[in-house]
Amino acid sequence: MTHQLIQAIKNQWRYLLTAIQFFTRIPVHIADFNADDLNKSTRYFPLIGIVVGSIGALAFVLLDNVLPLSLAVLLSMVATLMVTGGFHEDGLADATDGLGGGWKKEQVLKIMVDSRIGTYGALALVMALLIKHQALVEQSAAFIPYALIAGHALSRFCAVLVMVKQDYVKADGKAKPLATKINRHELAIAALFGLAPLCLLLPYQWFALIPVALIWHWFSHKINTRIGGYTGDCLGAMQQLTEVSFYIGLLMSHELNILAII
Image (cartoon, rainbow, N blue to C red):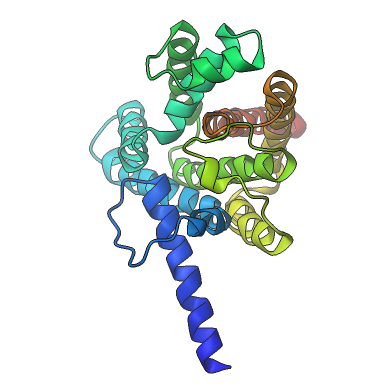
């Protein structure tokens, strides 16, 4: 029994390291790497969000003491980009190029795999980063670290939910090892890490989940209608879109709370 427990813990640790290796630029060493571990690592996708968000939060806290708020926020975003290598931003650009430039499924998928960035992708990437920055700047400085941690974790859980609800549509690709459906146990772990940081919010700020849910349903419906499922780029796009909508939702909740008080 003890041996089985130790082995189970070792397996979970290996899955976590696999998630860190795949979703970040943090150097880790994995002995006897197994491609199947990547599928099992999906449960820790939101935990990676906590790690990335915490790095961004730490960067902001340190820089906010010596720099203007706007610049501290911008550099905290740079910190998260460095940790992930722009992994999800790349997905947003590719998915937007494909969905904006292709009519048929085959065209959309062909454009998505093109390494060159097009007009749709450039516009989506620039606007997403600008809106994210502006939405964070408008938060109170004391709350920004909490917003970053919760936003990164929740948005990655939203990407996991796409994998639960839809099928992977490419014969191969960077997300192919993730494409196997996850079971309830794995989903519960992902939900724990994805939703736990919401405890950092005040009760009225849970209103931010409404814009996130709306964006999730809209984009999920769009990719299902256009290509019949998801790709790795679609997961990255979903993460970015729901992260941005979460920050916007936080601002909306603040304004609504003020109106309620008045």
